[in-house]
Image (cartoon, rainbow, N blue to C red; front, side, top):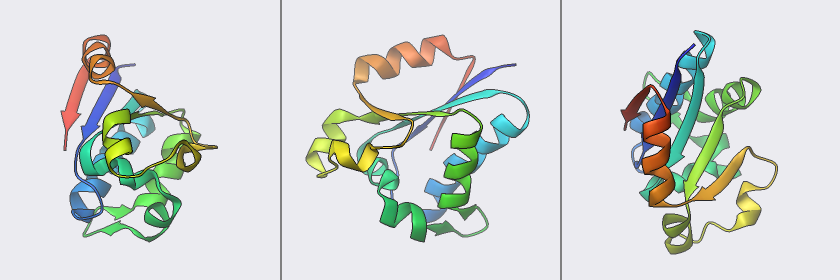
Length: 120
């Protein structure tokens, strides 16, 4: 089993790319691997319930379906604290989700702890 890290910086303004990152992480879990996602920049907005429920990528599927499969498969979400603050994403938007605020230093550590890293 490999450890896969997906680093995503595109948010609701790029629905296909955003959903693709979640789709790839989901595929990793379905193949028996461990997946983590680090959301930075506009990607932090993807964990808002309204966005999860409405975003669908062209050919890459429903963000909510991918998110739910990731959660069921044990994925962890690391959310840039600086990006969240500048985009008004409060801690309450992460409540009940396997997500936590993270720093650039944590991204570096995670990239070294994982076997492969994909960026979107």
